[in-house]
Length: 99
Image (cartoon, rainbow, N blue to C red; front, side, top):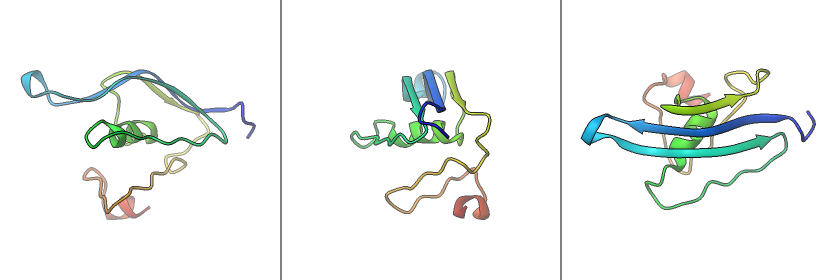
């Protein structure tokens, strides 16, 4: 892979949980491009949407608006996340969480 290969692109991506007055906007208007060999640090205060953005990038969540595109050669396990603490993703089973 050359450095010029784009692995993930976000274009005005957003992720909202709930609807109406109970809606919580976790990610709003994310625009980024991650290329092969890039290193990425996502920093911010608790509750600012860091994990939600990472979930979008990894394909664990679908954007509620905008787009998140991963390179077609990336398989479902080619993007990984390392969480700071013990974390399980409720939508995944035990094998998927440990993978």
